[in-house]
Amino acid sequence: MFNKVLISDDLGSINQGVLSVVNNLNIKDTQQVQYCDDAYLKIKKAILDDAPFNLLITDLSFVKDHREQKYPSGESLIIALNKEFPKLKVIVYSVEDRLQKVRLLMNLQNTNAYVCKGRRGLLELEKAIYAVYNNETYLSPQVAQALSPKTNLEINDFDITLIKLLSNGLSQDDISLYLKNKNISPSSLSSIEKHLNKLRVQFKANNAIHLVAIVKDLGLI
Image (cartoon, rainbow, N blue to C red; front, side, top):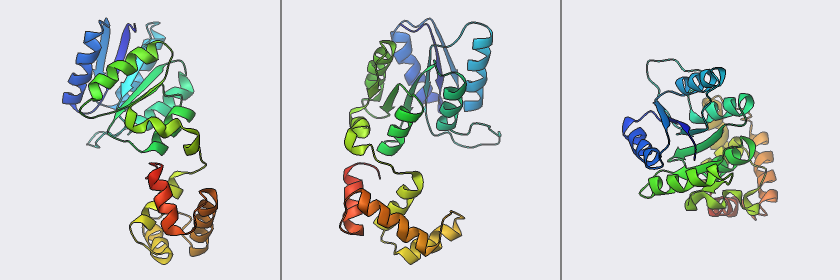
């Protein structure tokens, strides 16, 4: 079993729940932080001290406060760690259950497990720790289809935003205005039309309503 684990979550109550799971596994050295910057520094220092962490368990969402952060989210922390310390095992423990997010972290950032917080979250977390220790991946049941071939589609956050706005009943003109007001680019009507046409072809959708239904069925929004 792992002998040195770092837990990163801004809520102390969540940290304590995760800590109880780790303690039950008789892991000798478990440390906790509430900021991603602290997690990064601890991991880096441990490597320099030749006493590296074997596993990081981190949330994705961290509430902003007075303290300026280089890594404001678990995702930004994971991306940085994957570049510098790719051998570190990482388990995400989050309320975020968007399949697109899960797929990107698992496939592009070498995340080893993704566990959804919930009634069975801590039980699943224990299973995930065992799986990762045995060089296996683990996904909570509600996001398990994230790695299914049918969700392996070229779709980015901008595409997701467009489809979400469509699902909220906005017209293409409304979407263009919304993106301009939010300083999101591209925001021109022609660009939006091109993106939506590409998505309709990609998902084999007959129209915008069909596109939204397909993407919802896949769990991407």
